[in-house]
Length: 161
Length: 152
Image (cartoon, rainbow over all chains, first blue to last red; front, side):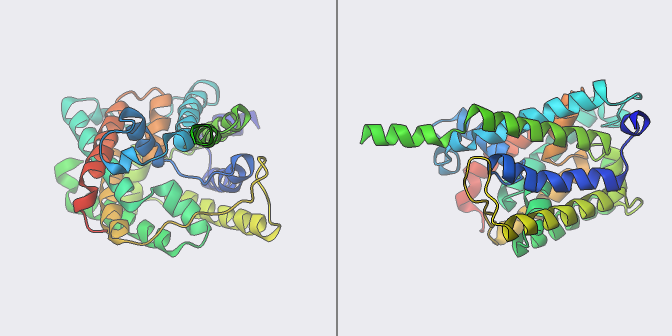
């Protein structure tokens, strides 16, 4: 058991926990699983009653839970690395630890922030929570997540990776 | 008027207990994203290169388990701990779902992180991911300012 926990977790175990998180979050808080709304919440907090309607008209009080959720994810990352692993957990390859790598992260991050807000959700809100609730637009969104990801990976492969 | 406004804005916040439960679920997500290696750039890259089934299996099982869970919650008309009936808020279809979806997918492929893994990486000590988060916030602000001009 201890051995199992300290190793990287297999797909069936990880997928099951992610799946359970969706109804669990509804039961424990009434909230729908989704991470990228936390970006809008940060924007709304940063320009309270100012700026474009997308941020000004967003109720930062009722959106505050998204930041609590995000803080929980950060804490979870820390727990996984420091308490639940006997070997280092890999995140970014060494090639990103360079000025060129940081530029790629900044540009790629911009695409993540812009794209998820334009699409109205990300892997959690659309692909997992949306499809699990049989929301057709979420299935369409998920298909186009992969269209974009595959196109960049195969099309620009040698240029950016 | 003022008191009504105040009381309604106060109820926009959740109870301390609800925030604690949300943080707990968030931590569980952060742990599983790190331990499953779904927050590992290499795993994401191999997903988009169709070299590994790992990520597809995690997402697929996640959707299937969530679907069964939501079906049960709806079947038994479950309420959340706060007592409110559980209801999924459907996300609408518009052009941004397609265009924005592709843009996000491109970013996911480049950074190896969708929003959950960005936070996971930061918590796991991968501080270069702060750059990804900075980019994501700039992207969010760009969308906020351009929203009126974009097709929806």
